[in-house]
Length: 179
Ligand SMILES: [Cu+2]
Picture 1 (cartoon, rainbow, N blue to C red):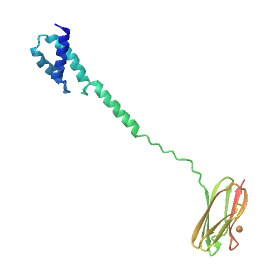
Picture 2: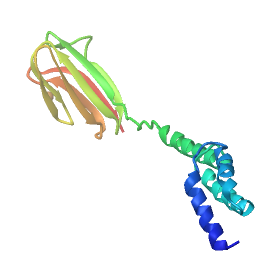
Picture 3: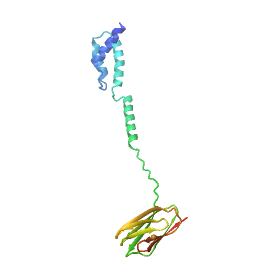
Picture 4: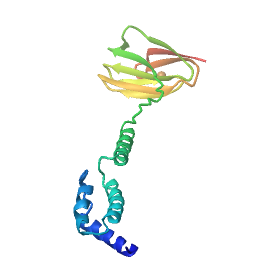
């Protein structure tokens, strides 16, 4: 028995069998091919070896292939569910609301006290057109009749400040910024 012949026969055998990926199909097919051979035992041994490799790489339900599938599945799961909600610290302003009715602050002069460094929003709703003036910070905004004007600022300057309807010369607010 020539080793070259054995190898050639084994390769031929591989071609004819084709090593289809049918579970359990490989060995039965090899048996049929070997009938005409005298070197049955040797060929069968080689064929079993080669066939085993082919079957192992054919994605059957052997342990190795199943393990690969599970790894892929696990990777997919970890990449899909990573959502975190991090809300930034929002500094809420102190809102000072003043409603002007017939040119005068409803309920009297609105008094508010904040700490130095606080954010403040002065919101003035008026039924008359005028100019809202925050003294000290010296911020002025026109307001239309029936409109609302907002003055947003940071209370960096400590003291006590008048909020005035400038055209009328009427005080509507009294803001204290504590140092
Ligand atoms: Cu003024």
